[in-house]
Length: 242
Length: 150
Image 1 (cartoon, chains in turn red, purple):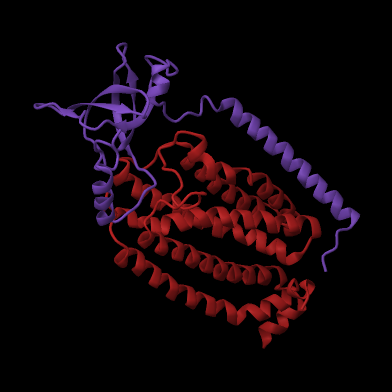
Image 2: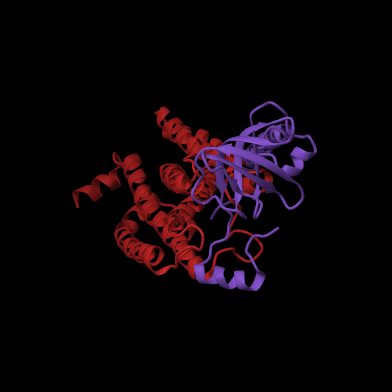
């Protein structure tokens, strides 16, 4: 099997039909296990008690918000240079998923911030740069919908996605470069992670679950994107009649 | 298979030049403004007179162990904060967040008075990146005396 075959829209659309439903069901089961692990099995924190448990959603959501952005920019770059249709669809379908992860990260952070810091929101570098990430996602979605020629639209949104990549290291290193209210990294650093192993394992597991969720929702959205683009084409008409 | 034609090369070059232009522009901008992007000052910076007097600023540090005094008839509290180097006095009137404790980090907004005392109008607890079960924390306490002591 070579790349041009996978890149074929019809091939992708027909082959992922079953995989997509299977992945969604599988992810839901994994998610339930992860939530049970994080909320009931993992020990309470010595300082925060139970409120720290929100990190089992907050931290993976925040990581995925950045990871989705990098995937959007990478696929956008490939789409821009080689004009591969499936990459165009993958890139633009990443935007609403990333925006969703960003909103989850921001909202769970605010809910945690109130009892821990004493405030819902502060304008420190970490929180502000994550909010800018949300605006980038929304900007890309709005820009895409503003064009009626979708192949033209993807050129502009890919470029914006690539420019916005600068924000990713800013989000990640903001807690080290500036004095912020947000604490430094617990896991993603060169030293040993600063969470006890019984608390770290469910976190890493949830990261894996969020990745599975990302994959399943991306495939679903790409199928939708292919349908929207190809609904008037012959092969899609034939599939519909089957 | 994916081939890199001369046309592709041109597009790649254009995108890369554009990206590096924008990123160097924004890094210069961040570098130029980095002094003004300070979210809070540390006691060391305040002692070096880097923080402005009579204007609304934020100061952050660790609450010094055994420095917390609570007024008997009001919500006024007095404590010292430090950053392992310098320390400074703080007064505050109001409700403290749940995680406020001696040895813990705080970020406060308020004004510096002439005698160097920080008059806080808001106190937020800064959490660190350490997570552990209470039993482990107790074990570490026994081993090291206390978790956060200067």
